[in-house]
Length: 55
Image 1 (tube, one colour):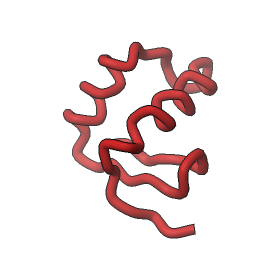
Image 2 (cartoon, rainbow, N blue to C red):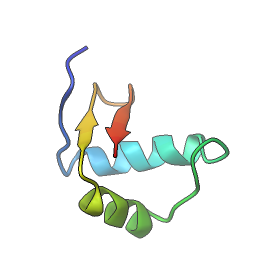
Image 3 (spheres, one colour):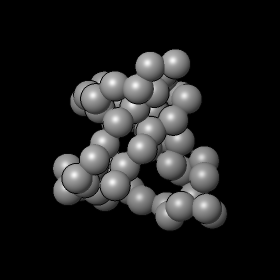
Image 4 (cartoon, rainbow, N blue to C red):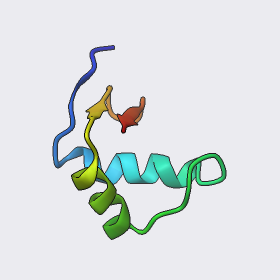
């Protein structure tokens, strides 16, 4: 499974994934999640639905 740069099309599924794991992470609105992505130093994505890494 290749790791690649995050693209705009990844926002919806990564936000959904974040919300599915809100207990372990934190619940964010879509706008709040987009802001987090924009402020992050490192954002990468795997295949759709497989995962993402945000620092």
